Length: 601
Image (tube, rainbow, N blue to C red; front, side):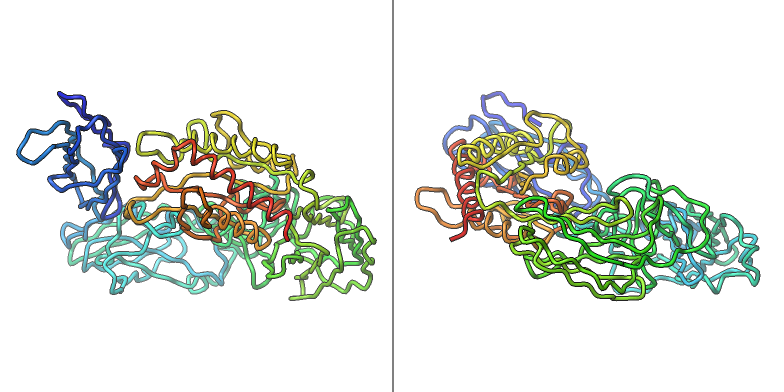
């Protein structure tokens, strides 16, 4: 948004857009003032707003429910007419209201369950809603549970339910707040709802809420229908590297599972199927990634027979797990990597496997594998430790010819053999954040990434880009390039920003994200290289090192680090970020850090 002005002075507001809806109690204005005379100042609703030397600004402002008038003015002093103005309004999303006792009402968007559920008799059914305060709320399941089950008021000292989502490692509201006054919730063991004859269960049962107050009453059918499973359902993963999570729909990612893996499903929540790993462990996969099969009997665990080791190259080895049984089709085993504090160890857990294994091949002399150990952690769960002669930099796994094949990788000793894949964040319609002059983050990501690739090639590395133009590239496509190219390092390059509710003047500096423990030393080295004082270079504050389950940090075939060079939302830092001389310094710092990592003293 650009202001109108009778003079050459203009106010450009790049964030927020007038149609932006704020769910927090504050946001910040971002933009620039152009062609202002000396001594002119920017004002927000009469309050002075500091400008950077080049005229950029970012300023935190309070937001209340409803429309919030915004008036920005550039003045030489308060006694003279404004040289430029920008006038608009922002909508603050109101909290959901506490509903009055009369007339009776239920807020439809708060009805729970909101999606179809599959539950086992040992599970708990949660029914909830926001309804008229002081009412009596109950539910029935017609044809199944005809006696009303009470849904009592939700008793909590907080004013609102905590329905925030994690954004940039901190919790923020992304939807209207739900008040605890007038909120009702029941958590009922499914087994207490069951009829005496399980075969009488309806295929899908509707849950009907009834709200009463005096002589008034109303009924609402909950959106999610309930199915009670008497046993787990057999299925096979129909797509490769299926996203797997601890908790649906946005919990931490687990190790992606390979196509044609046989699983047993005993629940459904928010279109995520609950997969049984062991009697005590579960994970969730998207329902649409499954093909259900007619199998009715859980197979016996696979007995590990022997472990063979192949040397693939001076830096890569393959471990082959061979079993007494030879399944003809679906892989009956799931694999999950376990974090290890040792950089020279890959630790994995195999579900659906039992010992004993009394034959482990001694590694060939030219293998990077030093030794292998295993232990049973449950009747059907086996843990494997693969110790290496050098630090691990990545691994991959596949079920092939009736055996698990796990490839482990170490770093080449010569820089000329080190391959680095640079991923310029965003691209195409996905802009990323927006700079204070309207610059899309995707553009600066690509500019710096190209410079980094060229500098790495000049320094003797092998280097390439996931994208070399302003093209749309999905996360899956970026991951596919990693699998195809098999680099030793993946560096995803971004520029940071803040969500609503934060102060843009209090966040600046570079930061690095990693997920796998074996990627942490590289992340530390890159962050140190970016932020340690260097004579002749501009100072870069250290915003921190973060362990985060991001898509590009979850890459396990190589060392994977996501780099945020600095904040687009900080005026002083933004001036530095768009300076071509600073780009060269960032690139030089990163190349130096990579050399130091690959050639330690």
